[in-house]
Structure formats: structure tokens, C-alpha cells
Length: 275
Ligand SMILES: [Zn+2]
Image (tube, rainbow, N blue to C red; front, side, top):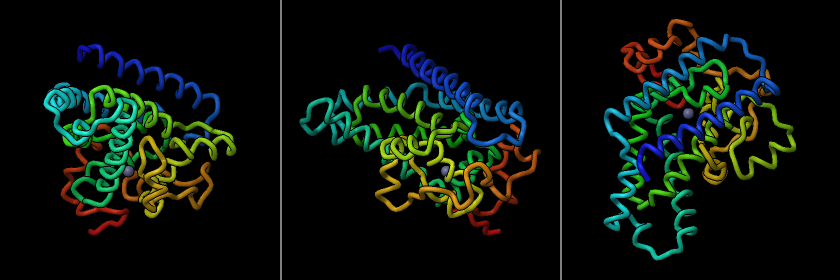
């Protein structure tokens, strides 16, 4: 399939999920918004836009290309094993999600990565646009990582397309400010990451920020000991964001683009300032 059609497919999945979740947020909000929506939405959407342009300029459509290149040459261990496509694809999906979970854990543990990742955590609210709030350089780093992964693991191109679709829908859903009935949440979070599950990760409390790292599947947190079922404070009053970054100038679009390069910042990892 042409790369253009894949872009179109990704954009349609993104806009469809975004539209539905924005409507759901208006109808059944989980928390009352305190900061205005316009400034935040502008910053969050702009960050993704800049990130997409940056990745396109540096890498083109390299992830799909890398998957195809590896498949053509039989690289990557999934290209070596002889399994039916659905089994191979399911294994590929699980491995990709696990590796992206591990990258997220590292982006909290390593100060160099945290510098960029803190932009995502600096949002003072938690809604569907928080899923778009990533520093463009973090988006680029993640893309390099993904290209390495698909080549090393031998993820086939269509599994990558399925994973990317699931990733777009899942990250927007699990950041949405939508209220789900507790009984529904309990059942859903056995299989997918719900907004209440992921909101814990955006808590201002460091030990809560350093839990619930998953993107699509909740099982990695549950298996690897980083799962925290609920925040200490109730969801509707818990504090969102980072204690160190709450000033409007720092949280403007230029402020967010520059914050990783702030020499004052020092090391900051696992929620503790080392200044
Ligand atoms: Zn994080």
C-alpha cells in the first residue's frame, strides 16, 4: 500500500477517535477543568503537529519502510520462525507493546529522556489532548526506537499498521476525561488501559507518576510490579501535573519547547529533583 494511503488511514483513525472522545468528555466529564481549554489545546495539538513534521523531515515514512525492508530480507527473529500469520502478528503486537512500555519506564528513569518526557507530564489537566502533548524530540527518539524494534524483531508491516492504529486509539482513550461506571472500568482494565488506570500516572505524587507505564495493554504493569490500582486521593480531586512546573510562562508553547534545554533544570528523574 502507498505510504500516502497509510497516512490517510492513520489520520482518519486519529480524527475519528479524537472526535468521539471529545464529545464523550463534554457529555460525561470525570473531572472539572480548572485551567482554560483553549491555551492547553493549542499547545498540545501544536506539539504533535511539530513532532509529526519533524519526524517526516528527518525520517520520512521510515517505520513502515523498515518493516518491509526487514521482511524482504528475512531479518528479525519473527521472520525466522515458521508460524501462521495471526500467531506471528499477535506475538509481534505483544512484543511491540512490551518494548514501548520499557521505553516509557526508561524515560522516567534516565535524566536525559526525562528532560523531554516531562513535557507530557507538565499538563495540569488530563484530557484527550494530553495524549498529543509530547516534545517533538521525544517523538523523534521514539520513532528511531520503533524503527530499530521492527527491524530487530522482524515485525511484519501489517502488524505495525495494526499496532499503530491500536496505539492511536488507546492513548487517546486512556487520557480522556471521561467517566466510566466503576463496574465497567474494573472489567475493561483487565484487557485495556482505562482513563482511571492511566490518570494515576499523571498524579503529582512521585510514586504514583512512577507507576502504570503501559500504553495499550495493562498486563506489563501488572506482571512487572509497576501497577497501582488507584491514586491516594479520589480521581476528581487528585492533583495532576508536576510540582516544579506550574507557571503559565513555562507551560506556554515556546516554554514547553525550551524546557528540556533549561540549564537550571539539573537532573530530574523518578520524581525527585537532584538540584
Ligand atoms: Zn510518563
